[in-house]
Amino acid sequence: MKKIDMHFHTKASDWTRDNNDVLRESREKWIDFIASTDHDIINDDLVIDARVNWMKSVAWVEISALDDKATGKSLHLTCYSDNFREDIRSILENTREKRKLKIKKQIDKLESNWFKINYEKFIRFYKNADVNIDNLNNSNIAEYVFQNEDKLDKLLLKLVWTNVNKDDFIQKILKRTWEFREIGWEEIEPYEPTVEKIWSISRLNNYFLSLAHPNFTFKNDIEWFLKFIEEYQDKLNWLEINSKASEEWTKLIVDTSVKYWLILTFWSDSHYNWEDSRHWDLWDMNKYVDEELVEEHFEDFLYELSKK
Image (cartoon, rainbow, N blue to C red; front, side):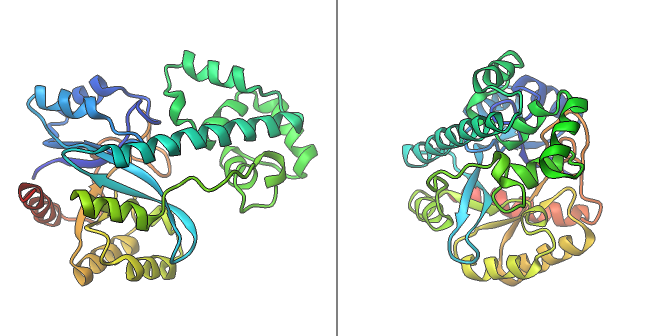
């Protein structure tokens, strides 16, 4: 069986490994094909480095996009091209710049609510850790804040009258949809491109789009997933099976791909050096997917590329 991973991250966005680490592990695991899908930034160097090392790779990016038709919620699209043009690159740059502005406003708000956090110190912390400061997000804020958990627990208890772990902090304090958002969430003008806009650019330039990790994007809301697919069925080329998709989600994704003639992409969404509840390590397979299915869709993927 060919070993492939069409969705993982590097230090270009929010993983802990650089391109050399990825290539070394790919060789050790005898991975045949890799495609780095860093968040809102194109890792051009990895494609070049992979080919120099006689490894197959393509340019790919994970785009933050707004579903402005079906639900009005944000989601992620993975997008492929042999030659990403300035149109998509400028959109990605704008997303990163606006996200940085949002992060600064959130940190300022946390500081006004008695958190010992300062934006300049926050940025310096991640620069010293060799993290790309152009791609910081709510997870980085939570990681930074939770360095001193003992004092933090007492503060949070005073503010929200309940215990809050790191995941709760992200979901309930740093996002607009939850009850404690007045402590650390700030709204700025919408900055994510719409799914429709990304599709229009992709159609014009022969980019390919896949819906990333629907099992995490839609969680238990299968109705939302089906509504989204119905709305955008003519705008997606591919649909992803994540390494940690449940048996129910895996079957649903496969059935949906058959119904709408969508090519399947795969896998890990790997971010870290360790396994967590949402991400696996590079190449780890979904236990509900057989090798034949991977082979079949990967061959379809290669065929589509050959037509470009």
